[in-house]
Every structure is written in C-alpha cells, then in structure tokens.
Image (cartoon, rainbow, N blue to C red; front, side, top):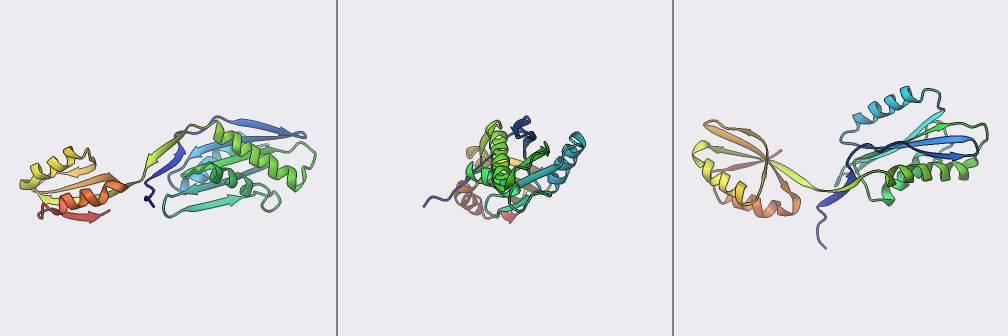
Length: 202
C-alpha cells in the first residue's frame, strides 16, 4: 500500500451559512486550524459577535499522522451537537479544521433527532461553502555543514527543488529544509552521501 503523503483541509475561513428549524436559527462557520489554542480565539470572537445566542457548539481536528480532535455540545444534550458536527469533518476527510455552529433558540424544542439533524446539516453547509484544498505532508530537518561545502549542498537543493525554511550562513551553516514525505528517503540519502553534512531532525 502506498504511504499517504497528502491531506485535505480548508484554505480560509468560510462565510457564515444559516440553517433554520422550527424558529431556531443555526449559523455555521468553518476555520482552518494550525494549533489547538486558536480554537478559543475563534469561539470567543463568535461569542462577542453573537452574544444573544444560546449555544456555541463545535468540533475540531488537527494533525495528519497523530490526530487530535475534540467535540463540544455546549449545553445541548450529550452527542446531539458536537458529534454530528465532527461527523461532517470526517465525512469530507478533512483535518486542521474547526467547525462552529451558533444556535439562537426559537422557543420550540427540537428533540434529540431534530438537534442532530440541524447541527449535522449546518456543519455540512459550512464545509460545502469552504474552499477545500489538498496539501502535501512535509517533513522538516536541519542540515549542518561547513561553508566550504555550500556549493555541494546547494546543488542538491536546486536539483530537487527543495524549500529552505530557515538558514544561517556563517563558517558553520545551518539550513532548515522542508521535504515532501514520499521524497524524504531519497533526498536524505543524497545529503548523507556528502559525508560532511550532518542531518538533524527538527
């Protein structure tokens, strides 16, 4: 089986989508996510914007190989909000994404089935209105070498179109490079053959 080296996410925050059910109004938002601490920032800004709403339910997933995720029903009955939202993230095979559904209560209780459907549909609409992109899984490592070997190192970098993320060019040089996962073994071997280059995991 070929090792997976791409993943799907969204490129930018979606525009708000609205789903209505028996007087309740559900506003759904999707955000690209890099770190867990961004979740609070997005939720806080939505709470300010929709301070009269009753619930701010959400689900998020981060990571490609080591997956982290969380669901939150925010006062709705257990598993009636966060889980259906998360189900939509999974069904679209996305990661590094947060979906929040803000509910304004309309006076009529929807029951568990009604809630599940409303949160699921709202999340689905938010993700369908998002710009979904495919990214490569990239691995970073550091090359440490003496300046005299610069030309040899640069030749491999240019030949393989390698991205230099950070560089320190002195008597001793350090390059942090980013390589697509499936290219990693081949490129690592090319640098190892130079012998005078130390390869350090980042």
